[in-house]
Length: 260
Image 1 (cartoon, rainbow, N blue to C red):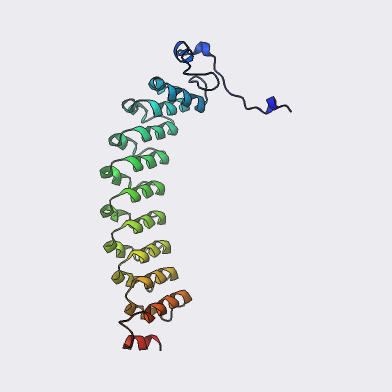
Image 2: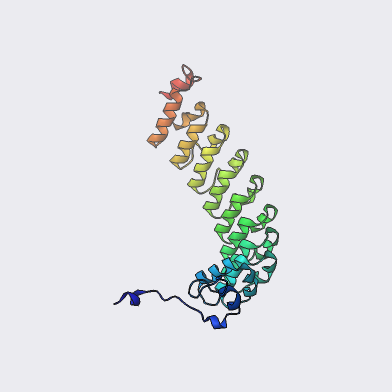
């Protein structure tokens, strides 16, 4: 087999059918097989419109979905509203990246999750909460990362633990107790690392030993006596270490009890 047999065939358009041949071709602003608007090649189309963006709007209604999607990148924002309901999701994704945030509400209920993800990432904060009940957890995850902390409460009981983990990482410390009984140990572990010493006490009897361990590092030493006989060696070790280094307990009745 020759090298020519292995070569990848590059689509080349007939310049005779190109309406721009007298301008772009003669000016070196396009090249057959490399920079061309007529072939069904994303790379060549993108190269052409990158050099000649003034032609982009002419292709927003093109029959080829990829030509429309690429044209969206270079066309003016005011011309994109006509493609909000385009039949191809790739085109609508490109539109979602380019539309001004104030116009993104038209795509909030798009059938494509990547379109909605882009909307959630770009829409104005005051409109973001409209996506908090999206059917896709990835969209809600974006919402959880962007919402102001004071508006995260509606996501505390989100059905997906990944969303709740983000909430646990961002929720105001004084409100973390609202998630203390979350069903996912990975969520409660985050709580144990962030809770105030007073609130972390409620996690000292958690079923997950990592939660108990993290809580033991935060609470006041005098609250640790309940963990002296913990089934997990690492928990017992951190408890003993903290008790041994608690000046306020040395010589006290609590210390005597801790060594019984």
